[in-house]
Image 1 (cartoon, rainbow, N blue to C red):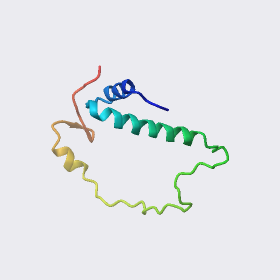
Image 2: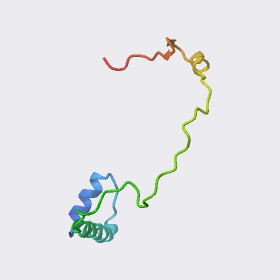
Image 3: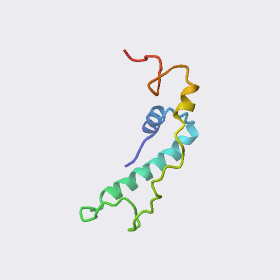
Image 4: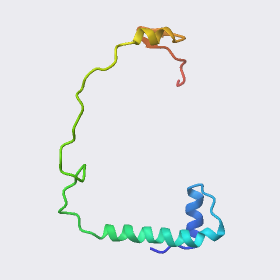
Length: 95
C-alpha cells in the first residue's frame, strides 16, 4: 500500500504530531513499508494454527497465594477525613 504526502499529513494530524516538510518523504516510505508488511502477514493462511498464550509450550510458574501484609484498615481509616462502617466517605460526584 502506498501512502502519499496528504495521507502522511492526515495521519500526523490525527496523531497530534508535528511533522516537518522534510520528514514527509521518509515517513511516507517507512509507513508504506509497514503497511506492505501487514498485507503480507494477512495473506498467510493461519487457519490450521492453534492460538497460544505464550510462544513457549511450558506452564507458567506461579508464586504461592499467601497473605504477606497485615490488615491495617483501622490505621488507614484514622487518616481519612470521613469514614463510616469501615469505608472511606467521599463527596458525591455523579448525580
